[in-house]
Image 1 (cartoon, helix red, strand yellow):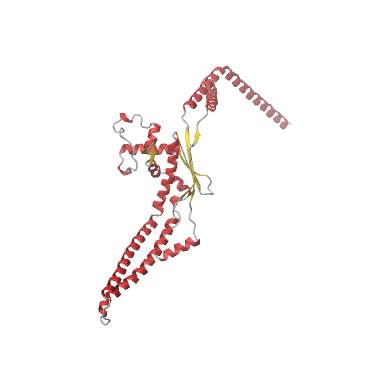
Image 2: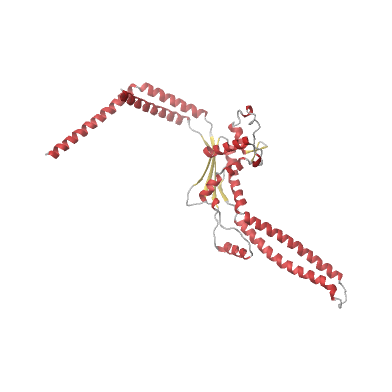
Amino acid sequence: MITEQNNSTETAQDEISLKELIQKVQEWIAYLITQWKLIIGIAALGGILGFTYASFQKPTYKAALTFALEEEKSGGGLGSAMGLASSFGIDLGSGAGGAFSGANLIELMKSRRLVEKTLLSPLTIEGKTISLADFYIQFTKMNKGWSEKPAMKNVNFPVNADRKKFSLQQDSVLKNLYLGLLKTNLTVSQKNKKVSILSIEVKSENETFSKAFTETLAKETSEYYVEIKSKKSKMNVEILQYQADSIRNELNGAITGVASATDNVFNLNSAMNVKRTTSARRQVDVQANTAILTQLVAQLEMAKVGLRKETPLLQVIDAPILPLEKEKVGRLKSLVLGGFLAGFLTVLYLVFGQLYRKMVA
């Protein structure tokens, strides 16, 4: 009996709580209805602001470039070739370094070094060649007001300028350009971790800049890879080429010396063998240089195979093509979204304001 009474009491309390909740909701609805003019007025104002923003907003152009990251594979004929090269004392390099693997490459492409190098690259506009940095500053009107500041008046970025000789103002502007591009314009991503396909996306208000910056960044990354990754292989090729050229010159000189010495002892008395020693020595030089040159040429070709193996890093799949994809918020969408947000925030303000007044009272 006691259990039945307790259950009845709990049911009655639940019913009372539900009724109170419904009453509270009805009270709040009634209160908001009394404020309908304010809510609708602010929602309309928000819609107008959204529509105005969409009307004056400049469109952005998105350039996208996808590429495959070339990965070295061990074994096979190439592994045998590298082993043969090692027997000659030649280092053809090893697998792709950590800086050029997967996620590390993404961060490398967004590094200040490569972004700044891209910004200082040349771009030809209407027959005039300027740097990408100067072009960006021009169409974004970033230099507005610089003429009034003596330190900023002549700040520009000539094509292929020496980065080490930049002034404090140039460094500051270039750093701001880098941070701005990284925050709002540049995106480097890997579509799927299971595949080595990456994409570069650049958005800006200028179609030419978006396309040029995307392509130049990919080019600068590839060149940086060649410069760093294959540095040892390039040195090997240059050294071997120099040695091969030197030995070839020595061989040509020895061959000429044999011919000259032979001419000098033509019809010489066979009993006078001392005169023939010069020709014999030259002949030995020819044979020795021929043997050395044969080995050097073989080593040089193997070194060139190793160097070719390491380039290029980026296999471009899809490059940006004009006209680029145009992005702009629609007026109707901005109108609806602006009105909804303004109305929703007004309702929240009224509800919390009413609760605060009740708590104070």
